[in-house]
Image (cartoon, rainbow, N blue to C red; front, side):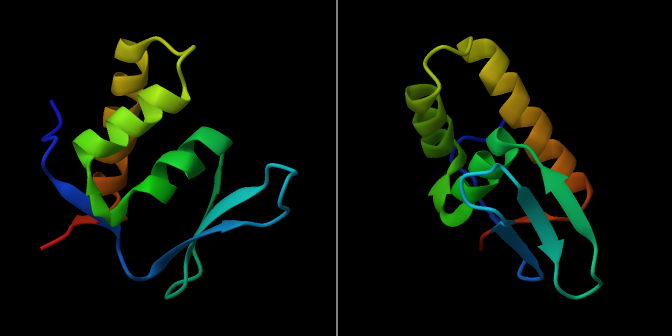
Length: 96
């Protein structure tokens, strides 16, 4: 279960980028070691919201309002899986 009050952010060496605006080419770059990850639009949108300002609860609320056709339980599961994966890969960190 996600801690909804927790505030996360991308580690400072990671940068999100929409390469071809309007064409759906989304990437996450590690500017220190050159690693890159191709993202789908939903993952890019979720990571864009993990900005060190919003807590997880606010992010979940925003996404459920903007993806009303998606089953809320499935959306929550997707968000949780993404956050856990990104924390495991040491891409996200808790804002202190």
